[in-house]
Image (cartoon, rainbow, N blue to C red; front, side):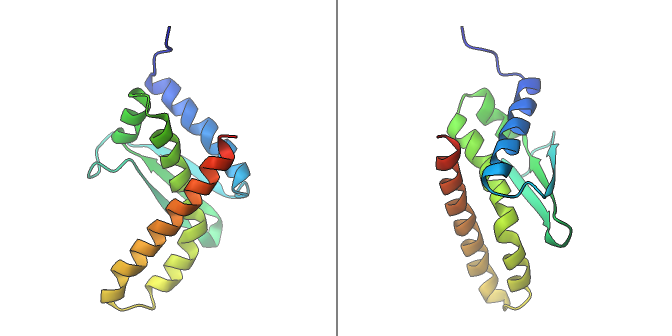
Length: 130
């Protein structure tokens, strides 16, 4: 019989995965808070607020992420957590670069940031699942 995926088991799974991934990504010295949001945010599963100067970050996970967990989409559930944590690596450069570009370059910079973050997430996912 399959174990029921509850809100409580979801939160525990997120915290366990984040703790393991922090070690793989060598970001154990970061203070990372996880906030489980109750309201939707444009169908976004998660976002990361990074304060590089203080090695501090907050991962916000929204209802669609819990939906991935409840539906048993373990790949997307885990990859979202890893992707958000990967922003810790990409965000410092992005925050410096965004101040030095024109408005027309911001979209390009945003695309590069997300693609690089996703590439890091793919690498880490493959290391994590071993």
